[in-house]
Amino acid sequence: MGPNLFENYAEAVSMIIFAIGFTNLLLQKNLIKKIIGFNMMDTAMYLFLALKGYINNHVAPIVADGVEASTSTMVNPIPSGLVLTGIVVSVSVSALMLALTVRLYQRYHTLDLDEISKRLNKEGL
Image 1: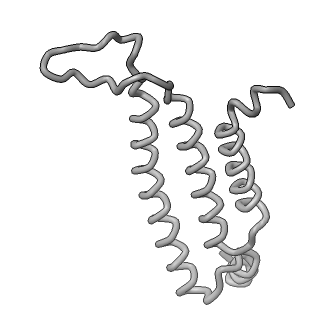
Image 2: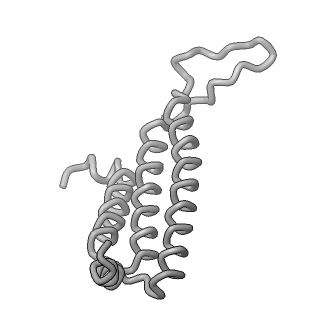
């Protein structure tokens, strides 16, 4: 491990959170736990994008009173916009996944994905 790992520890944390979420998504049978894993992956990506867009000692690109700061001292606003847009989309996707999970539970009275698959095969669907 080089010195870059200690300088970029937040990016490493983001990758670890993503890996935990991905592992959770693959290994869990419970649908709620799968949704939590998916949300962990989303959060890790937003953290990574926010970290990549942040620059120490730079200011937000806001023009106030007609005075513009030098563009070399401004932060790029695109990663922040991507993070905000992604958060809105992921909240919507999470709500849809939870609504579908509630409907599956109402029909099959379980959240175990293997059990739902068995019951679907018995129904011939």
